[in-house]
Image (cartoon, rainbow, N blue to C red; front, side, top):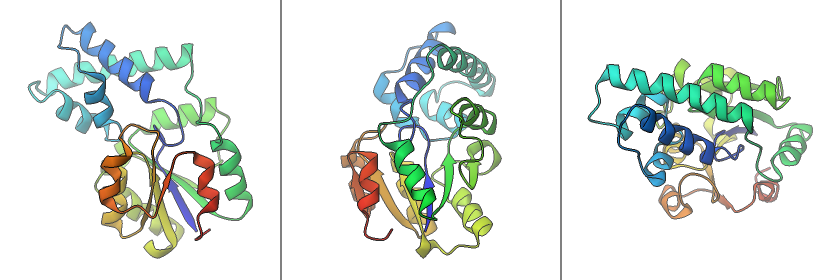
Length: 213
């Protein structure tokens, strides 16, 4: 089985850090500070797409200023207190890998951002492949999943997308693969149910009970 995981809000408990960094960045520029729920709504998208949705009245120059400010604020906060994996994630991923499953990450993070956090967490080389929003199409477009399927020479029927947002669920549905939803991430589980996930996890290690593994 090819297991494809979202990062923020699925494996990493980073939604609070993302929210605070975005709010601080808007405040730094004298912009209206978005509500936490509004920021959580765009988690999972590529940063350009997220900023256009969150601040539709700003032009490209303004989005560029905020993008730079956000990256700086996020990095500073993450270095001061790094995000951690959710409980049970490392043990579960290790078990799945040891059982012979192929594992990948499909994330709205940038390549630089994902590589940095994997290095900080000691996960360099842990996943068999990764795809980031700045090197392919942003979620919910299925391109990053198509690319991963091609890289593994896998069929959609032998793969699953595990995520915490509507963007993950929609991307998996468009790619024709099963979806597994987690209830503890950026989007409420009620928003994910309409995408007919094969499984809903309240704790990550519940993934080991899936009957297709």
